[in-house]
Length: 152
Image (cartoon, rainbow, N blue to C red; front, side, top):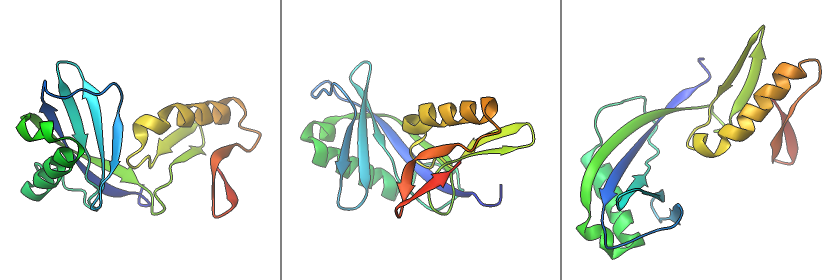
């Protein structure tokens, strides 16, 4: 789809037994939003950058330093954490960063979830189901932009 652009996201998996979380935490860091997701065995997924790029090359030194600095700002225990993994993914995004559920013939497409795929997947699947089973009726997204409801 030529309306989509790539948004590069970089993340780290860190290991520290000196800190624990019972649920994901989002930190509104002055430079970029950060989230820490607890995993098994004292591991945490720290992410993620938002870089306007389709490049899937390895994590950059700058991003790694920024992610580590933001993790340390969240809790000093991350200063002694081991780096288990560094990863990169390219997310599809529309110009307005809002997702779309669209039907073309017999095909239903869900795309443009930007950095919210995990959170929005259930709602997007529900919309896709409504489109498939009620394709003769308009289906609306559950959010509004600038006071106007958006149609799927």
